[in-house]
Image 1: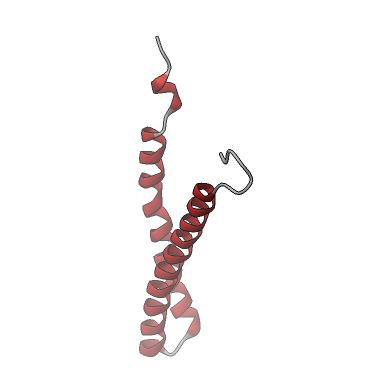
Image 2: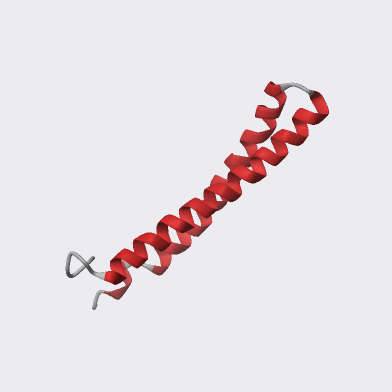
Length: 83
């Protein structure tokens, strides 16, 4: 949480988070577009290309689940409470 309205650390953290999201989305969509494009070139059917590209996006999303679980485990505030 920012201590002051113009806190540079908070601004930098928000910028890095936004850049990370954009890069992750670009990688996901690039791979999905590549798979869809290859299927379209092979079959010349847009429905098949779409059907081949959406599992790629779903797999990238499913790959985030263990990372989110790991983040919750690392930043669990319940572990740091005194007994």
